[in-house]
Image (cartoon, rainbow, N blue to C red):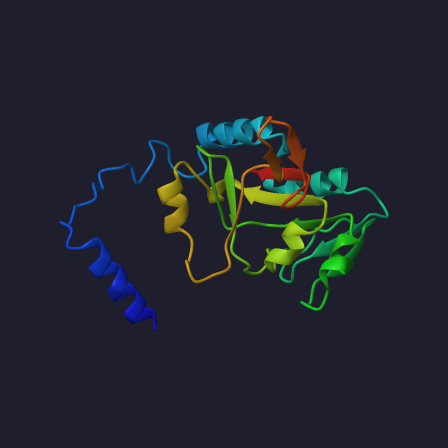
Length: 202
């Protein structure tokens, strides 16, 4: 069926000349991954997108997370989150895949790591691996606290894509979820968390 349909489309549009697509775009940036310039740029982009950014040393991750997750808050955690990241005062539930969207909506937020981040676009990529979890836990709760380590920050989108496996369930985050209507009225939280807190470590 598919082949027949495509054959009809080709017949309808006729023969077309093949055009070579230029591939001379940048594939690497001028700064090495994790450089101070890239960390500053990523933080600037995220703040411009209305995210909250906390700059800490690697050993400051637990205290930074505790600062933004108040005692008693109900947070969902992905399996494989590094030891010590989850604050002691929070009510933390490790997701086993059985929580429904309605149940996830009852949580105050989610805490995850990430795979890579592109500084030029302020984009953070999650791929569902250990410490990141399935897509639903990062899209339904109202607050996402995401830890980004310095060595995960690259400059360009091609560098980010090169670190990702396309067969994995990818989630790309550029600030809190927001959209605007034709009158440019910004509405937050339509497609994901209204609040994004990034702990930028290193």
